[in-house]
Each structure stands twice: as C-alpha cells, then as structure tokens.
Image (cartoon, rainbow, N blue to C red):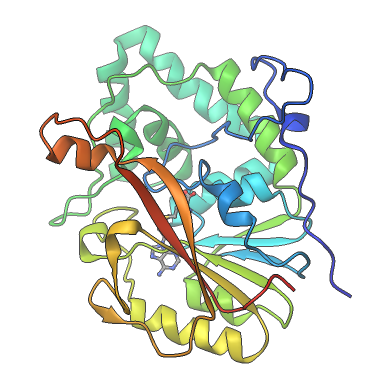
Length: 308
Ligand SMILES: C[S@@+](CC[C@H](N)C(=O)[O-])C[C@H]1O[C@@H](n2cnc3c(N)ncnc32)[C@H](O)[C@@H]1O
C-alpha cells in the first residue's frame, strides 16, 4: 500500500519572523537551513507538481541543502549525499538539533570577538585541518554565495568570506526547528547515489539533482561523479518500477545529449520545463545589457509518463 507524501501547507511552517500571509494567500516555503550552490528550494514547487500523486519512500540521493526534500516534507524519505561533513549536519539536525544550534551559535559568537573576516578564517582553518559538519555549517552560511569550493591541489576549502552578515543564532535556531519538523520522516545517510538508489523498491520515488560537469567537481568536496553511472542506476530503477525524476540544468542540455553525454534511448518517458527565473550569469556575461526577457528554464526528465 503506497502512502502519499504529506504536502504540508507551507504557511504552517512559516518562520516566526515572517509576515503572516494575507487571507487566502499560500506562501511558498522559502526558509533555508543551509546556503548551498545549486539549491533547488525556489523551484521545488514546480518540480514537485510533476511527481506521482502517491509513492512509497521518497529518495533524494544528491541531497545538498535538500531544497526539494524541505518543501515536499515526505512521510518517509532516504536523504543522502557523498559529502560526509554535509551529511553530519543533517544527522545532527535530526538527532540533536539543540547541538546544531549550539555549534552555529559558538562560531557566530567569534564575529563579535574578532570581526567577521577573522572569525571566518578561524573556522575555515579548523575545517581544513579536520573537515567536520559543525564548521561546514557556519562556513556555508558565511561564505561567498554559498559556493563551497575546494582547491584542486590539496582539497582545502577555499571560498572567501561573503559580503553579507550570516544569519543570527536566533534566526538559525528557528530555521533548525522548522527544518527538523519538515524532515522528521527522513533518514540521513552518507552514501554514493548508486547505493542509495539500489535500495529503492517498486513504487518508491527518486529525485536526482546531480552535479553535471567536471567544472562542478571542485564543488561539494570533489567526489567522483559520472553521468553514465547515473544513467545505469536510473535504468535499473525504472526496470523494477521505481519512479525517477532527474533535474537538468538549462545550460547543460542540447538535443538528446546532456553535457555531451548521450541520453540512453527510451530511458525517459517525459520531459518537462521548470522556470528558474532570470539568469544572473547571462546578465553578467552580457555586460550589463538588459535581459529582462531572458528567462532560464531547467528541465525535468521523468521515467514515468503520467503521474500515476
Ligand atoms: C547540485 S547539488 C544538489 C543540490 C540540492 N538539490 C539542493 O537543493 O541543495 C549536488 C549534490 O550532489 C552531491 N554529490 C556529488 N557526487 C555525488 C555522488 N557520487 N553520490 C551522491 N552525492 C553526490 C554533492 O555533494 C552535492 O551536494
């Protein structure tokens, strides 16, 4: 018997500091726990509308900051990533969120003592000495653009401090409470995507949001990733009746190829578009010329035809 995902009304979990929704207005859930490049929370609603109406366990094997997981708030989920310090953050949220709040508050307190840049430098040095979730949590909130990147030669995290002020411990605490509630049904595991996908059963749903290119290999901890291997896993899942949805960055796809890798014939039954708003990158590349009409659309490839 399949259970439906609980698509909880977003305003139910709205952070206390948010304005109350006007009568009849449903606010999308936008409160972020982590800042993470490639975060999909903004697009999550338009991704979720293509999911099957009912499914067993929800899998998110490229978890990152869990943009879709947080919006979907499924009853049963397996959430995993190969980046060990990142998974530590999620596990701490699940098992002892007060500890997570303390970890953030202790590092944030350094700002008042030494200034933001020095505080960031101190946490960065500690992380690079021994990568761990507690330091990564503060770094991803305080670093430039949430772009956690690593030097090729020694694997050190190298992102500079951001210009913004990282959220206060009070605000982070509220975020942790909200995210704890929304991810109650999830188990957080440190796994390669293939291992996680192998454990999905007929009727389960997997949402994949992988890094695509070599250029992303320096992001997220430089794990080995290959699209061919992902296609193999997706094919095996489809063959045993597991639903798979794959997000494709708008710039990474041409014709039947993804980053120059051919998409196996017949693997996907449907292709849908997901609006992601205006492209800041393009705006930058066009050197300030107005691109008001330039909407970027990501794709969603689905191994199933109609939402069953
Ligand atoms: C594009 S990000 C996912 C972003 C996510 N949807 C969000 O909302 O934040 C890709 C993620 O895949 C993870 N990853 C890279 N290689 C992996 C692998 N072989 N198995 C599992 N996860 C991997 C990275 O650590 C990163 O967190």
